[in-house]
Length: 496
Image (cartoon, rainbow, N blue to C red):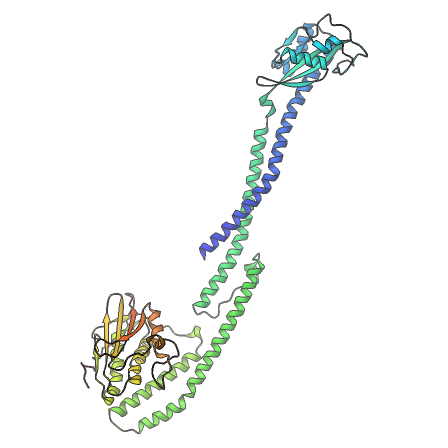
């Protein structure tokens, strides 16, 4: 579940990063290009202002010393980035109306000016070619040309009637991109900030979703472990911000848990009622057994009736008890001791029916991770099958094999064997005649599988009949309950 939570939050974060990045790029790239174009326009506009600053001086005089002083007084002139191309002294007069003083000429230039442009001296550091200067003066409009290291703005200025000077302002490449890098850095920082904010918001939303999903998964695991009182919170601050779908899932889980608790309670009541109905025939059996007198058979019958009565009482108490009130029980038992006790119990009936029996391998303690009562019920089911499905006088044997990892219990007999081993293991299908419920081997199989073991049916290599192999996985941490002493087995090799 932790991996699921990380994957869900990471998916939300990736979706937030992708969405915010696309939105940021859609806005910031055009904005960055606009900033770049603005910087370019700002550089050329500043160059035009520098060129226009010389217009009044050129309209008053074309004296080189005066123009040179006016040129040096400007920022661009002081930095060596401006030049003035003066007209020739004998330039012919213009045709038409003279232009306004200090403004670029767009009409009324003389044929000579339109052809050759200024051909006089040049003041300052010029970078444009004479042809470009002549073209600017002849056309009477400003334009820019590419020069080494940047651009040159050529601005024609009418100095008097029929004569035009050209002011050249150099615009460096660095001026065209001034402030652009800083603007891109700021825009990139803004984009990263937006992405970071979206990641934080997505993480917070994902954390709420993951927390709700983890609560639901934890409640499901707790319910599976037997805690019928667990419920998922669906209201309050704990689930604020959770998706509506998860809240609906929580409502469905709580409804299911309530229904499971009701069904289990009804099942417990039914089991208790059915078990309680057995008290009347058990009372009759106990009274009849008390009148049998003395003898091994009478003693064994009374013992069996007493044990059956105790089992019924235990079933009734267990069914009436709530699951949370169940007492803690020991985790393991000594398989050898349980098997010795159960074989000793069945040996009395075996002697009455003339059955030879054998018990081997149960001399030393063999810890197994199952309850003592569960193992006793499993052994009784195996031995009961021998007595129920074989004729009187059929011999049987019980062998206990213990290894470091498992404990194997072999119950064999000299009967006809299993006609269909697969069907015998199916729940509710008996392999014998009348009186079989088909649940005995299924109970034994579930006990074996609860420890990681198994149950197998086959043919006995010694007696030639059926053989049931119960394998229980052993664990080193199983602790045996303390015992005052251990009884020796009553069984001997094929004794009667």
